Image 1: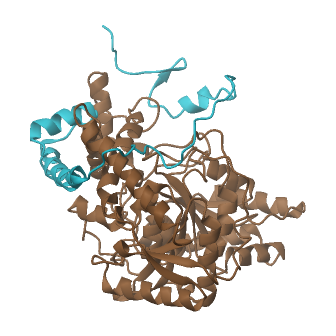
Image 2 (image 1 turned 135 degrees about the vertical axis):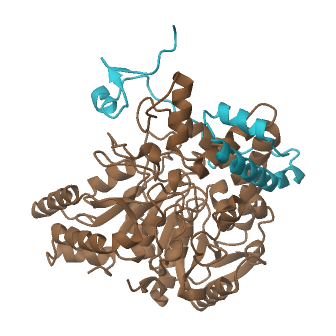
Image 3 (image 1 turned 180 degrees about the horizontal axis):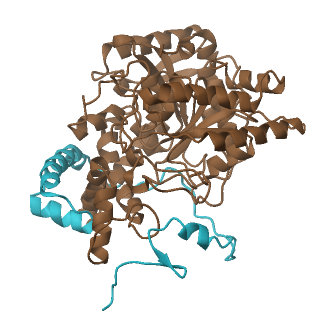
Length: 483
Length: 95
């Protein structure tokens, strides 16, 4: 049961071979068994979960049969869910029980999905290893001495360990794709504006995008069908006709042009990652696709540009945490300013403070043009590179991460080394493009390697089609760690 | 561009953060590492390039100026650190 696809689970539910309650109990039992060692979940609330499962069973008894009715799913703890603790991995929100639902949560509820719990993450989604979570790091189920990636590390680890068949994540600079790669699961970051940011706790608003994480591309397509859609409450939500992302999954790949950016295949990528990625590309050629070399000459600037833009937006977004309306307030303080300072200093962890300080600095008088405006101009150059590359190809492919999962502590002393873990993913966010990571083999220490797919704007269906065909021909995505 | 400890303290004040002396030292070092890393942006010729604030070239939607939200003050204030009579309480600002 735990290895079934979402289509498989839906079929079992529809045939009444299993009830939503039984399914929820199965996964809750696994969470109870394995979460103490993996730390993938921050909050589990069996009563709430089982109430949702009972409601799904009642809906089915009344004749309803929608694809996700009764399917268990867990949310990254960045998504507000009414009545659930929603911490964003921070002490600042360790007491925050959300009074409302994020649009994504609302849509999954309407679709009849059953919430299994809230997933651990780097604090305010700032990290690539899950080591910045106030609730302790998530362990990689393939090797508990290694990081799961971040910031959606809880989502990726829970999927790999089969503690949930589906999860949500968010991706600001690689936070869906990089942990998907490091944990050997499938994750998709949609085109900016496709999934509503309403109720998704903001990090860098011009880059943040929610997306599905699951065991396969087919599952991600099904989840994206539920997540995507216009929302008037998000000012950057795009008004587009609804798409069925499962419709073109089976299309043959004959004639598909895959662009390989020479900048993604230079030095800097580990040999084991390179071997797995090259083998995946050979498989694609067997499936009828052609590979062409393309250039993304400014992509090397994406990490430094991101570390101006994202902290600038974060310093502004996180100014809302002031100890007045919700969240942590210091126990002792003097005047109002002192209350702000003490509440924020106690509530935020070291990486969040660093990014707020960098952001405050690059936006401050005298430095705005040199840093922030210059980074925004470079962002344009990076986005224009993709426009030119997509004149020569239909999809771009390369590694998701330069290495397989690294050991705890390996990069935590030097923030810049940690930032470089996202060297292949960040440009995609700056350009607002859709991207995916799918498992494509194993590297050093038997750790998973991810292949990154990048599509043109609104190229989700094309990407999912390419990912699905690959997963029909290979079985990397079916491999699971022994726990 | 590198920051001295006084500059770090000034930025922390602007950001409403308080750094302990121990935190200040490691933060100072790490911020300078990050600033050295982003310094490479300065070498790029961006003359004539329009800054890109956003990934999608869409204009902000307008909506009719109507009340669309229900009054949920009680639910929102239930999670506040301190309230009284529907108001958020903070330390006295005006003597």
